[in-house]
View 1 (cartoon, rainbow, N blue to C red):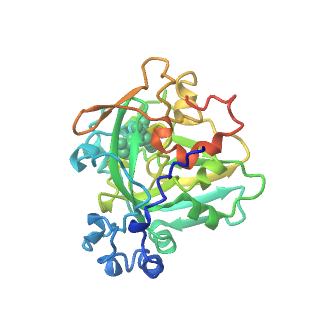
View 2 (cartoon, protein in one colour; view 1 turned 180 degrees about the horizontal axis):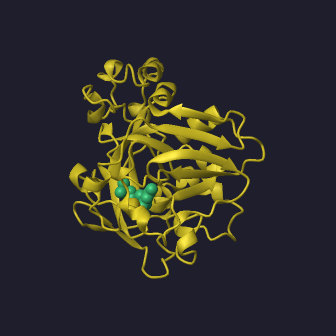
View 3 (cartoon, rainbow, N blue to C red; view 1 turned 90 degrees about the horizontal axis):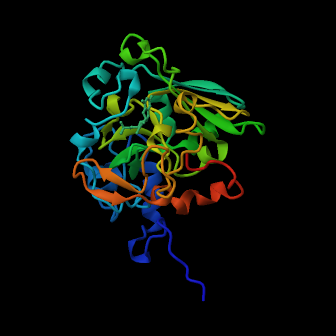
Length: 316
Ligand code: MTE
């Protein structure tokens, strides 16, 4: 007899939100009335009740972390951001990167190319909080609350043309504040990419907040992309341009070391990095070592994206 395993977003009926509250929630999301209507929602996270913060938003209960939250001080003080150097301790240097004004360009093979001021963009999208696991290719991991909106909302704004098959995420390269850019052997700017189908997946998220506050510069403020099912290097920080194209992008790490870092980079504990095992990960904060899961535990959302692509190096 086939067994049906409930998926992460299928809440037990007892936890379901009554329809009138859901409809009210859609209105309450958006920057203006973020919290006002939310106080009584049964599933609402504690963070969402803090109306004082500009980036607090209601927690989407579909994204169950299944792990303790990483302490904020650990997630914001142990970072990879090569534009500011190769140490993990880049927070004070990154603080010099201006966070406003900030514009995001949508360009390439789209019907509506445009340049959006970040604050104008935030008026057009519905913000929500998602607690997501992040797995770095170096085998450390964190679980943190991001505020943002699905990348699919940007696809709607841009209107990709039928020939567009891939999406490039270009990140800022600011010579005035980023000493790493003087290291000319790196192929700056840091560009990452994915397929259009991956960008449209509901798990692909544009983050503007972290722990209910604007994303701090060292974590990719003012806006970064998140691919929670891929190794963390795919999640580019400080995005300036999103470009739609018919050519598969060759991204920053792939240009540098194609035998170690590929285009797909989906998390898989059974496919080791050429120089180390990917079977386990170390949790920031506790330093506990836990087993890594296929697609970082998000297979229910994304596994179907890769049907028929088995010949690709999906896990590098
Ligand atoms: N984005 C840019 N622009 N520059 C980088 O060096 N590092 C990547 C990714 N995005 C990186 C980047 C890597 S290797 C990881 S693991 C994550 O950012 C780290 O994100 P965090 O510092 O918020 O934990």
